Length: 130
Image (cartoon, rainbow, N blue to C red; front, side, top):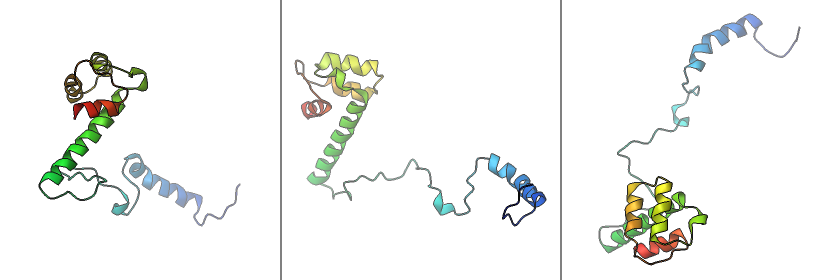
């Protein structure tokens, strides 16, 4: 028989395990503090960015919106295109995006690229779409 520093008897330990078994199997959090568990994101939550507070209405807000849209487009392009695609023209970019099941807005952006251009990176594509 093992002797340890457990202040409870074996019987009491088994009783406590039996009491907690259903709770542990339920998949609920076992923390007693609710603040520890993050809340899920709601559909109507305001999206915050690392650029700070929203600028006041006017040209500065429009510029910030364009820059944010360009960053998002760059990230999406980089996610759906790997380096082996480049250098590429509009046709090969569209083909690669279709192979990767890219979303429709990304395909539309690629269709808006000027004909005859050669692009070496996602940055070049975003610059051509400006």
